[in-house]
Every structure is written in C-alpha cells, then in structure tokens.
Amino acid sequence: MLLSVENLEVKYGNIQALHGISFHVKEGEIVTLIGANGAGKTTCMHTITRLPPPEAPRVIGGDIKFQGESILKTQPSDVVKKLHIALSPEGRRIFGNLTVLENLKLATYAREKNADLEKEYDYIFDLFPRLKERRTQRSESLSGGEQQMLAVGRALMTGCKILLLDEPSMGLAPVLKYEMFRKLKQLNEDGMTILLVEQNANLALQLAHRGYVMDTGNIVAEGTGEELMNNPEVKKAYLGG
Amino acid sequence: MDFIIQNILNAMQWGSFYALIALGYTLVYGVLRLINFAHGDIFMVGAYISFFVASFLIGPIAGISPLLAFAITVPLTMVLTSLVGVTLERIAYRPLRRKGAHRLYVVITALMAGLVLEYSNLAVLGASRLKFPELIEKQIWHVGGVTLTNLKVMVIVAAIVVFLFLQWVVTRTRVGMAMRAISYDKFAIPLMGIPIDRIIVVTFVLGSGFAGLAGLLFAMSYPVLEPFMGMLIGWKAFIAAVVGGIGDIKGAFVGGFLLGFIEVGVVSVFPSSYRDLFAFTILLLILWVKPSGLFGIPQSTKI
Image (tube, rainbow over the protein chains, first blue to last red):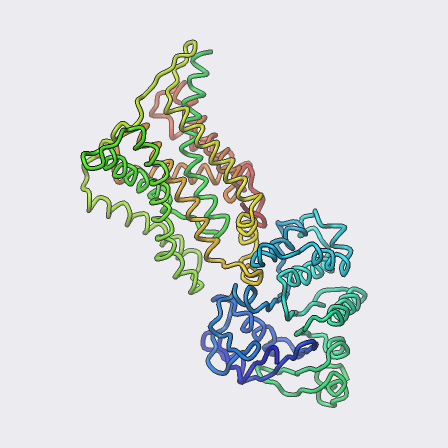
C-alpha cells in the first residue's frame, strides 16, 4: 500500500470538513476522488501534502500513512523531499513571474545535488512539447492549457513517487481536457501512481482503475471505475443521468 | 564644474546609505509583502553593534590595531545584525504568519518592534550620545577642486557591490529563484519541497546584514550614535524604496540614489531647512505620475 488514509477527520476552525474518510492508493494505480463542489476533495489533498497553516486544516482524528508510516508529523517540504509526494494544485498555482524552465528548475530544489535531471526534463518536454517551445517565456503568458501542463510537469520534476492532481481539467476546453487525460494515462503506463481529484466524474472514471465518491466530507461510494460508472446513485448525482 | 562634481559625490554618499537600507525594505516586502517598519531601527542596532565591536577590539583587552579591527568589525557587525533581524522575524512575525494574521496586524507589529528596539536601547544605554572610535585614518584627496575622502569612496563602492551581489542572488541562484517565486505565490512553495521559513530567514539575513553594514559605515562617517538615529533615515529609505518600486532590487537602489541627489541638489541651491520639504514633494510628484514606483509593476511580480 503506497498511500492510505484512515478514518481521517479534519477541521477548518470550528467547521468539520472531513468526517472520517478512508481510502487507499496502491503502487501503479490511478485512483480518483470525485464529488461535487465542497465535498472535501481539495481539503483531502491539502491534508495529505501537510501544507502549513493557514492553508491546511487541522487533523482531529484518523491517520494518513505513506508506505505504512504515519506522515501527520512530517514537515510540508519533507513531504516532497523525503516522501516524494507531489501535488499539482487546484488552479495550477504556477509561478507566473518565472519562466517555464525556471518553474521546472525550482521544483528540483529539494533533489539530490548530483541527480541526473537532463533525462527528466527531456521526458517532460516529450510529454508536453508545447512547454519545450515556450521554455524561456514568462509562464503567466502561457495559455490555460499550457499552464496546466506546466503545473503537472513541475510536480513531476520534484521526482515524485505518487502524483496528486487537483482538478487538472478545470477551465480547459474539451479538446485540451481529453489531451490532458491521455497524457495522464501515458504517465501511468510509464509507472507513475496517480491520485486524481476531479469534478468531471465521467472523464475521471474512464481513466481511473478505482474511484471513491465524496459528498460533504464523507465517502459515499467506492469501486472500480466501471462499477461506479454503472452505479445508479452515482449516475444520478454526478454523471448527469 | 567642481562645485557640481563635489555635490554629485555627496549625493552619491547619501544615496548609498539610503540604498543600502532601502534594499532591506524591498527584500522583505518582495518575499513577505510585509513593510518591515523596524528596519530603520535594525540599522540603528547595527551602528551600535559596530560601536561595541570596534570599541572592544581597539580597547585595552583586545588591543589590536584599528585597521585590523576594522577588517573584523565589518563581517562581525553584519553577522550580529542579521541575527537581530532573524530574531525579530522569529519572535515577532513568524507567530503571526502561522496564525494567518491579517497584514495590518503584522505591519503594526513591525512598527511596535521598531519602537521596542529604540526604547530598549534608551533604557539600557541612556540618552547620552556615543562617539564612534576612528578605525580608519581619514584620508582626503584633492582632485582638481573636488575633495574626496576614502570613507566616502568606500560607502559608494559598498552600496554598488551590495546591489550587484543582491541582483546576482535574486536572478542567478536557487534561493533567489525561490524568493521570486514566494513573492508571486507563497502557497505552492512547500509543494516544491522548499522550506518556506528558511527562505524567509535568508531574506532577513540579507536585509539586516546590509542594514548593519550601513549602520557601521554611517557611524564611521558621522560618528555620533543615538537611539533614534534610525528613525528618519529609515523612513526616508522606505520612501526611496517605494518610489523606486518596492519589491524590486533595482528600484530600491535607484530610489535611494534619487533621494540622495534630490536632497543634495536642493541644499546646493536653497537653504538647508528646505531640504526635506522639497525632497518629499518631488517624491510625491513621482508617485502621483507613477503610483507603482519607477520600476514597480502593479501587483503581480515583485523582487
């Protein structure tokens, strides 16, 4: 088990955002969390990455384990540096005042000095050729789709073992959405474990091996992508029919 | 002609002091979006630290030559002053940041921290002024009709070297890249595996260290120290940083020198009591035309 969340309960101030949720991700899997706005998906991601206050909620119960060990006491930067968990956050959050290449370079901040990074840059530029074309541009001048590619590329450059993606399709035109999901599939085929948060349930379930449905801080259904797609409740609530 | 060159030199000396202090305001603002109002007082603390270090070194216990004492005082003052800056960050600003305090409260904390530094100095050392010992024998060179002192040259060279160094740090090093990134969006910094507090500490080390250097050079140039010496010069340097475009290294440097030139320019024509009135009116006009400062870009990118 690479990542397991066990009965996790968190609060923002006095408001409980997660009411004891459990899920897990095995190595090599694509697992998705789907659900409407406010279901607690992003909260979940921020809790796993241990973001410093005030962004992250307070854990009041349960545990998050990575390779069997609790990570609740891990420093935020060590989540990336030592555990190799990377997040491409909601809304991309790229550093718009840096160039594309600088964004990728900055993501290698915590890596070992003598790591051979050339291959990894090449891998990302192969995956997203647009980034290579625009590598010397200020990243805020990129289009939305390109910024999303950069956000994913940047997360990969941290040298992660598991990639957390928060709404990678948000604000993208349909063509770009499919394109992005094809790239994610390719990433997974190359061995990357992915935990994907999506509002676009249809797309996410087609891609994922397994999925969990979240609703107001609880997990209300789980199963393989196919099972969930055929689950009448899920269909009714999230798949538009 | 000599008169003009002489005034240009004087302007550059004052500009150097303003620039050295303004750089600290701009660094901290660029990274934390915090106007560190205690920074002028860090400069004052730097001057006092250099006084004690220098007095001890040439005093009866250590008893080394003034020149050697100077060589030791420079780095030691910078290190000790940066420790003061880091301590300030640790006990005053960091706890507020952790609790997600509104910027207003952090700025007020900075103002109060500055006052605490001033008045604790007053309480401990009293109101009497201290006389800074002479470390370097003053040399006066006459080039044509222009008078040059070794100290003046040193101050100007120091400001330029510090500017080039910071420019290099911010544009060429990994830490500098992280500083620029924080100024754009703090949120994603930990996601890159970057310990955000460490970058902030580096920022305070740089800003306070160079304020300490400015304090030392100022004390050598105008060797009378008093607890409130950092107040007005701190305000002026802050305004210089804003006029240059706060958050931008170049802006702080240019803003500092601009203020120096305006002040000396005014004094060379008008009675010296007009100096600050004219200087600040001109700066007001600059902001009126360009509210984001000379090198400032509205919001998005700083440092």
